[in-house]
Image 1 (spheres, rainbow, N blue to C red):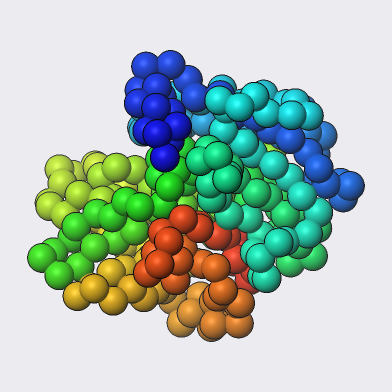
Image 2: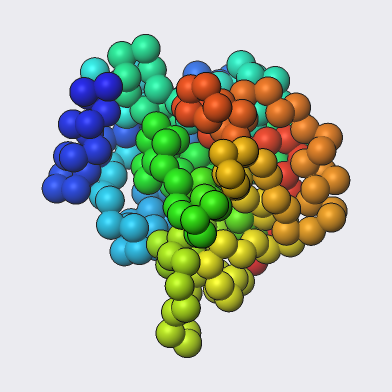
Length: 248
């Protein structure tokens, strides 16, 4: 855990280095070099100015011991997962992107990757909650509330994300942005394709942006999802099968 603390402190001064490793035999849909470049550009241009934590992505075959990891695999090692982030045995943050599983679900690898990158950087051990009321807290998820909305960077689809204002339970000035694409109008809200993880009176549950989203979500395998793991470990964040991105 000390390594996590040092990494979290370091990112406030120097970019955290994230090793991008492709172990998948399935085509990513875009060359790895181009995908990594687009993720870096998206992060630097849109996410960094809002959230303020610099990162440096680089492609390699083996990560340095001090670096975080971002790895593409063919098939999910957790049933139903398109991707999730966790910790390595040595305590370093790691994101796993499941390429074949994502493509088989008619999703884009780039969107899954972007989703996991944003959420891993801000909440690397998945233990943050935002207090909305005395009884209600929202999990610190950057993409879940708007996860079916996407936008393009160099022709590659990326995931929409919420701003820090989304987690602030007070009235904001007119014109405040709560997400990158400007779809939301107040804190703790969702688009129709989004959902949130809520802890109310000690109990964790999901709420959905629409009945259609809830229906899709109900078909998913929930094992290992962050909302369940928080009750015991508080480590996993997963983008699930059935979550359909919508292009901006």
